Amino acid sequence: MVTVTTAPADGAYSVLAVDRAGAAYAIGTCQVINRTGTFGYQLGMAVAKVSEIRLQSADAVLTATP
Image (tube, rainbow, N blue to C red; front, side, top):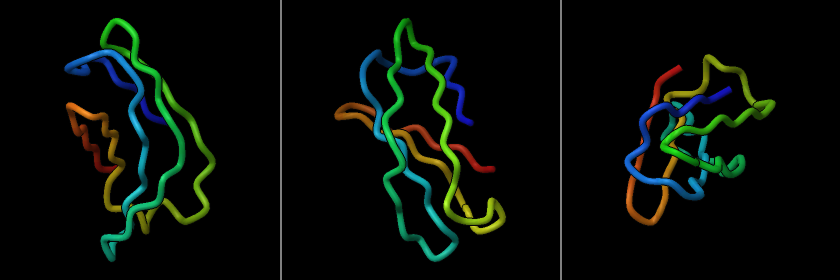
């Protein structure tokens, strides 16, 4: 589950799970409205193997570590 509370801009953000080896896997899209959004997805890998979750749009990249 990802919650965005202060995105720099509204719009669609691609959500990627990045593993410890650096491979990025597209897992969906988070719609941000009024600088906030929520996205949930059942990972196909153990959470311990995820190094970061990345949300990216044409204008911004947001990252978080689990």
